[in-house]
Length: 516
Image 1 (cartoon, rainbow, N blue to C red):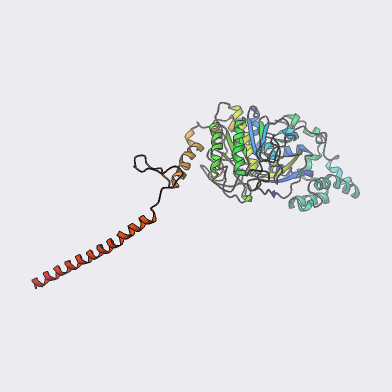
Image 2: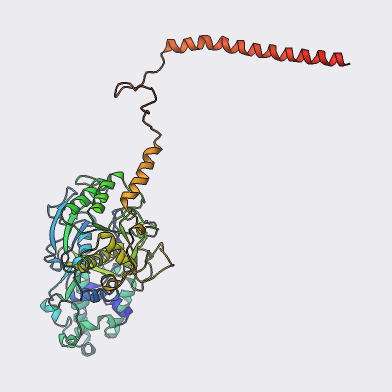
């Protein structure tokens, strides 16, 4: 199948993509288009990165068993068929979710489920409808239908799913090129290439190789489908209608993830600011000290984030940029900066949504869990490696892209999962990688020195006043005494100076007179 055909196969029947609607929370980094879960096998077909990034090859070595990924996001729908058995724990730090880390109602409720499915989705069992041809006839049979039969077939198989997804005004919602292709299909009755497989019977695919578990060959499958998930649900709206703001939720979430066995923390969220609250230092340092790898999305230009923002700027965090299917940096879905470590697919993406559905989406929010899943595969294949060494394998095995060295858009290059898991990489040198501990030692100390306060030296002879009391200032009477002697003294000194000048002038004049 050609790349162009594979890219467009997502746009069929009920799975047609609409114009991307950018999510509104400032910390979110994705745009999502909802669609029902019917014909779940079509969503699997759209996951081009499984083959293009060497993931299916890496599965011959491991699928991520024994590794735990914490998803700090809007919450995960553990009941989704594609995530069955993946979640092993969770919590809510927003004040508005359940104790298991389920989705928190907000503008972007589906975001956490989308992210989780790309990291460790299980896929799902094909339904009876999926196993049969979607359209109960051969493509050439469409030409034999009467006009009335054709219109009835069209309404049932093409229009009805679109109306179910987008409403009666679906033509205003879907992409223009898709509308044009539908119109051509209606006029000619010639099935487009991107739709043709839905007319094939199951027998047509019997001889195809399938590197995946055939029992779960439908739905979205994650990069590490045997890794386990923890869900920590946040509210990313500002202000948070349920309780604490994002500044307080983030460190609590990171700490909980570390305490509850996370090997990897995925954070598909980001701000437009490069710095972060000092209150985050302790939590991210805690993750670093406990050998937990934090993976974060670089952010999206379409959201106004042209430069990478926190938490992706925190030293030690593995920062992920986004590329399209041709490995070009996404114009809308990838911020840039010196913090970028690696790039992965950010468009076009698919993922699971709460309630059993699937969606097409874009953004570095999706690129991050692809890398987090890759990190899980590396950890499972090389259990003796530290988090820093896992990061090292991912970066040094990446496919070259962008300028030589560390590129501000691609970082070290584009993710190559097979090489990261099975390849040979340069020897690890800890000095090549920044740590948060060192950054805190240098920068937080500098901030403390900048406030201009210094403790009184113990050998100065100065005795501080009682704790909590200011040092006494001179009283009014003392100030008056100073003024009483300071005035006359100044006048007398000035008069003496005048006398000295006059004396020098007279002596000089007398001397010249005698010489004459």
